[in-house]
Image (tube, rainbow, N blue to C red; front, top):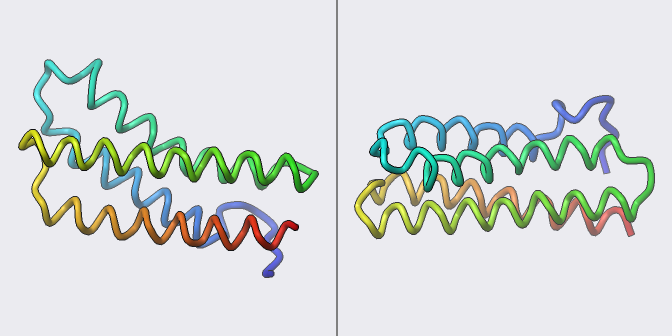
Length: 119
């Protein structure tokens, strides 16, 4: 496994940050009535992916690192669920959701690899 001097060098973190930026952009057009609902939820879950990767990087023991990579993974699934809901109720277009879902699946795959390398 590649040794990184900072979490910002990790491709999985970079992809997670890209997801958060794209989620921010597509959620910007959500109706005001969703400010404390879907808008807040999807933005928090998407930013939580990269934040938990960063926190895992900062941990010193493998069990701690695994726990935060698991949290990042959970946030990725949560974000995907919010995206699918938003598409179902007509807030998001299918093309955006497909693109973001593929990126989320990539992050989940990479997180699984990172976790396996810690054992």
